[in-house]
Image 1 (spheres, rainbow, N blue to C red):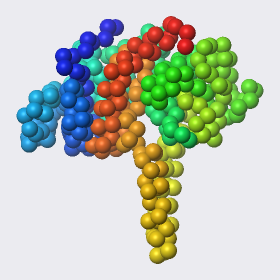
Image 2: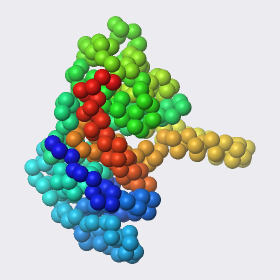
Image 3: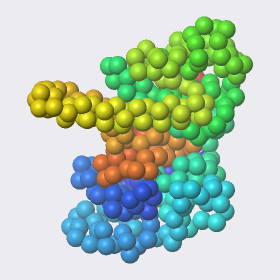
Image 4: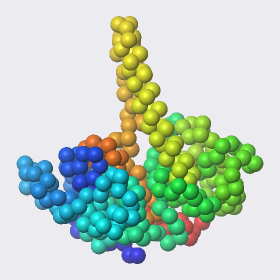
Amino acid sequence: MSRPSPLQGGITIAVDAMSGDHGPSVCVPGALEVLREQPALRIALVGMPAALDAALASLDGGLRARIEIVPATQVVAMDERPRDAIRRKKDSSLRRAIDLVAAGRAAACVSSGNTGALMSTAHFVLGMIEGIERPAIVSKIPASGGHTCMLDLGANISASPAQLVQFALTGSVVAAELLGRPRPRVGLLNIGSEDIKGHEIVKAAHLLLQQGSLGYVGYVEGSDLFTGVVDVVATDGFTGNVVLKTCEGIAEGMFGLVRRELDATPLARLGAAIVAPALRNVAHQIDYTEVGGALLAGVARPVVIAHGRSDAAAIASAIRSAATFVACDLAGRIAVALVEPA
């Protein structure tokens, strides 16, 4: 499948403006934030014209000229089955946004909608990079000294040894771009670091990775994820999603406990004023609104999945990420990495 040529004056990002918990009320402000930062960028807002026109009513002419409203009459529900979304929601904002990418009218798509429907539709409409069997969700997680890229975070419940190797390679290319590491260190998530540990699929993937030319360092355990010992962690989507949701829950729960304790007594409140800058810095590192969404890696053109609870800041971060992936030709780099030595 050929990729669209660069659009005159920059690139266009298609935004599924009806998606997520808040729809146009956050998608439009998020898009405007990035448009103000990046003068060459254009946005295609996909959704119900009446709602989008109302959200843009007070916008000045210069910025408005860089926004196209693409009509869509349907919305994919967050609990809708992917198969039903593909068959029955061909005029949904999610489908129309991906169709724009397939037609070359946009270079990438951003959506905070139904992850399963987005993944299945992107796979069906855009196709896969040659040599990649399944798409994988990849994002950054906080680690000592920066971040680690982890995948798959939920696109595939299970994965074969060959697919885990593909995830590792894909993650290595993403980490090189996102983290600025020319030869990322790659680890395979397991229940132990010894060769005898783990089930047969993980063991087989381990042997394949040892024979390859990636910067593979071996097994990593759950306790290693945040230490910075690797730049990429590869696993199946079931395990990856459990890890991701656990991290989110721990972060929210622990910060709630800390806030409660720091507000318990006058002395604690005084101490809170002293440690507040450090706590804000930690919160900034784990805030999903700062991550920039998760890339659906492996599909032929960039698709970025934002959190369903995304606010305007999170949507803006996701659009920035999509523009970065387009600018660096991430899909092309993955395709090259599949056929050339790493």
